[in-house]
Image (cartoon, rainbow, N blue to C red; front, side, top):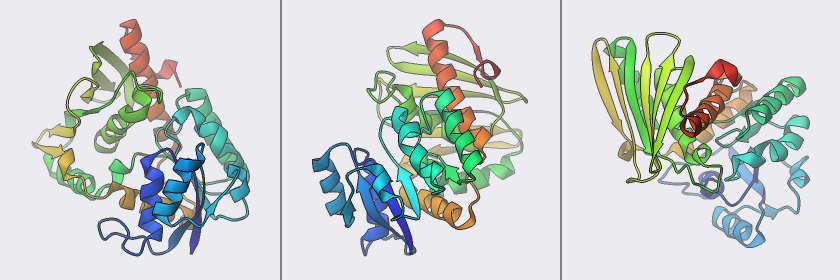
Length: 294
């Protein structure tokens, strides 16, 4: 049985991951059998107790580092990505496989520090939006193989530039990660316009692809993808989402067992660079080249 510790109780993900592993019925009938959340730490004691009770987590620790020696892996799931370097560092230094919830960080420099530390200590880490591995997205991606090389597309999702959790880094990361999962990496430049908290973004790739993103901060909550290839096109509606926490957790557990990172580190860094480029672009009105940021 893999013993998992959770750092951060403020995020709904803490409850979801613990329920999937610890409750007999899991969530929606989906349960991970070979792992258990055994300890948790959070900023607020009351909220941490609520999560521990709901997820049947046996121990609340006084300090995150108290988990070292008691867990085989850790999940850092704080809502504010600006805390992720600080709270993941002790576990990476201790060689404990670490999942860092999206975004890996809100600072490109700190994201690099996390990755370099992981390489130095030979500690497997990963960071991703669980939407990447949700079953409907996997099937959508498989379906696209018959559409020929993808050349353009559209990814739309909710993201609030005024969020107290570092603006678009909080929810906009879902949109950028879905874009990368479907259309691949290799983004060269970014142009963004923020109009009344709805942000229109153009991503130009190093190959022939050009992708449009729309971050909705002043419209209905939704996620959608349209992908166009030379032989056809396809559409995904976020309402088709099933159990992303379950499938994301399976990916993390696979990394724990194999010590192989789920996503290449340069792709994780690209996500943060794109988010930063979007922010810079809509604030300055200028197109931003990723090579100037990474």
